[in-house]
Length: 145
Image (cartoon, rainbow, N blue to C red; front, side, top):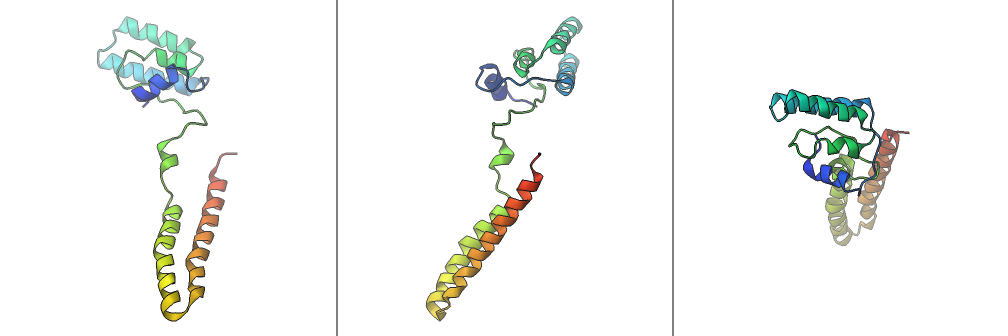
């Protein structure tokens, strides 16, 4: 569900005001039903707010209906430019690249000094490049067209 910070951000105009459809209105109805069940709203006010949800055309109009209520709020899609927690997580391939560089390069430098095998520097670098390219191909294929 949308937390209070998202609610304030969407109402203050800093985020683009996206249009809503049936799924968002259904999420609002479910949230209103939970507030009715928790007795935060009476039946008349529930009906009044549901009518306002049906008349709402944008996310900010819909969220204004919930501004004086605690969670739950309707779960609304984020704007395309906003960051999410999933965007900040490092992928498994990204972790493998970091691990290959952090462990592979020092070992390759030691091997280069001790045995004169400077070619071993190419192994972690080549592995990192291969993993990075694989991640690029995977993420490119997973993006919606």
